[in-house]
Amino acid sequence: MNAGICADRRPPRLGVNIDHIATLRQARRTVEPDPVWGAALAELGGADLITVHLREDRRHIQERDVRILRETVQVPLNLEMAVDPEITAFARKCAPHQVTLVPEKRAEVTTEGGLDVIGQLPRVRDCINQLNEDGLVVSLFIDPDERQIEASAALGVPAVELHTGRYADAKTPAEQVAELDQLTKAVNFAHERHLAVHVGHGLTYRNVSPVAAIPLVEELNIGHSIVARSLMVGFKEAVAEMKRLIDLARMRGF
Ligand code: PXP
Image (cartoon, rainbow, N blue to C red; front, top):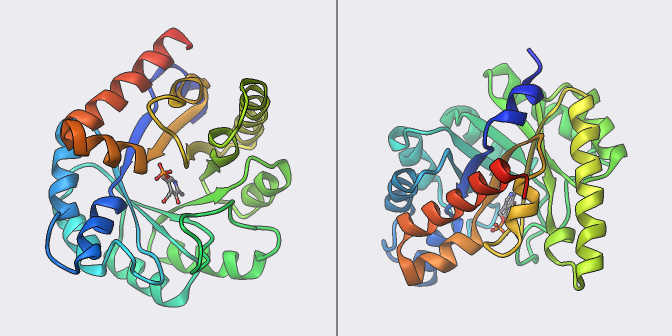
């Protein structure tokens, strides 16, 4: 079955990244707010999957969160992680529904740029092989770049997540149109290589619609903007608002 043709007609999935609920908790090293509660509210708001990033420095999500979420979340759990032996071992024990491999630098504020699959081929391949031994579904978070997409397809992963940071950071409407065009071409290029296409990073209530309207995008992972809005309107409502925008954009073709 060609997954893309089906995805064309269906609204894309919304993956709600709950890392920054944990960021607030870790600011005081206390027990609240609990991202596990956030995940339950996200599901009530219409989240199609829950996404968490277990960073090497544990600045937000902790192992405890992933373990409990794995037990409690009713939609699929997507674990973002670096190509790192310790975290790979943890992922294999936890068995999330999907693992997204991301690059990681300790000093960065957030994930800057996609994984350099070409530059780190042996490490990435070894990590994927280990995760595949336990039957885990692996997606690679990469820039919307044809060479990185080719390299990902050659590794046999079923999905890639294209980094939308350059689109989100565009300073002028013309720049934004150019980045959207490049993203759309990359989505089509990946789809032609039989990869399911996910997108994420820097997407907000203001800029999400053109990306959600790209026909072959199957999944959007969004965190900071939803958590920020939830402080004003509550988490369930913030998720529901984002879900409505995405569904509408796909229905109307933006
Ligand atoms: N997708 C991936 C792979 C990410 O690393 C992140 C940031 O953790 C996101 C999506 C969500 O980005 P944002 O918080 O900017 O919505």
